[in-house]
Image 1 (cartoon, rainbow, N blue to C red):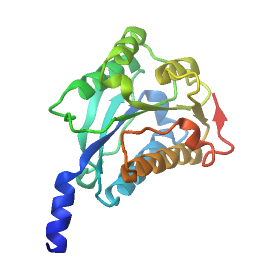
Image 2: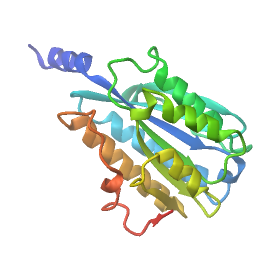
Image 3: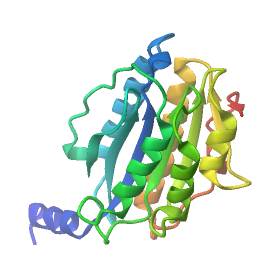
Image 4: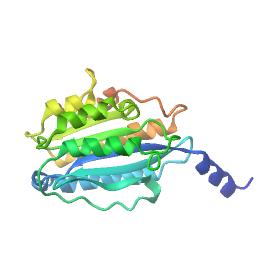
Length: 224
């Protein structure tokens, strides 16, 4: 079997490992360089995922934004094929709409196949929800498929609602990290990237890692 044939066979056998980003793009994200830092962090993460050797898992990335409205910015697709379009910030903080969208996405077998490994959901926000977020979060946490998802949360700035982010984690041992500047936003995404790459290389990519993995990489970042 040639090298090219072997690589094609390996790629065909790889199962998707979805990483779904819920990104706050409300108007307040437009100040202090927050949206620019988020765009840089996302682009770096996608580039790193794209460079991962294909094995048991192929990392797919999907992006949901919530600003003027909650919407799918990018359907889940292999990181190696994703042409990242930077996010822009305006509007309010319809986080509940984002919870409903990610639940629907995870439950949609056409967009995330039954072959996919347990997804990861990364929630990033600098404010407080202004919609009916509690029923939407309840629906997400009761979804049989979404309930198993690995979850990470980052609050940006002083106005981030730590209680909402903590409820999203639905884990008494889960850690909500706080970022006060662009450097810390990038640090958080670098740590999440390392975790997902480790999962993709492991013998069992379905085995999610505890959020404790972040501690060694995020010394100095505040826990909310």
